[in-house]
Length: 135
Ligand code: ATP
Image (cartoon, rainbow, N blue to C red):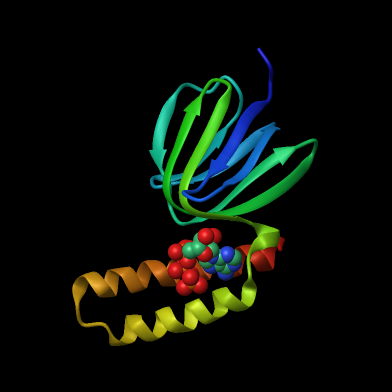
C-alpha cells in the first residue's frame, strides 16, 4: 500500500485542495489529531482553526471552519463550511471581521447571537494567527 494519503479539502463552493501528501495534522473538535497512511477509518467534526500537511519535506497550512474530516486507510477528506490556504487569507478582511465580532460580543444580549459572535471572533483570530505564522 502507498505510504502517502490522498488528501482533499472541499467547501460548498469549491475544491480547495487535492494532493497526495505524507501527513496531515487536523484540528478535531476533541483536539488535534494526525493522519498518516493506513489510519483506521473514522469521522470527526472539525474545530475552527489551522490544519497543516507535509509533502516532500515541506509543511503547508490551511484555515478550516465547520465541517467534518473523514479518514480511510488511504485518504483524508475535509468537508468544511469555509477553508482557505494560508496564502489566500486576506489579513485586512480578517482584522475587520475581528473588530466587528469584538463589538458584537460586547453588545449582544441575545444568547444565540452572542454565541455566533464568539464563533465569528474565533474564526477571525485563527485566520490572523495563521496568516502571521504561515502567510
Ligand atoms: P467575513 O465576515 O469577513 O465574511 P466570516 O468568518 O464570516 O468572515 P466565513 O463565513 O467563514 O467568513 O466565510 C465566507 C467565505 O469568505 C468563505 O468562502 C471564506 O473562505 C471566505 N473568507 C472569509 N474570510 C476570509 C479572509 N479573511 N480571507 C479570505 N477568504 C475569507
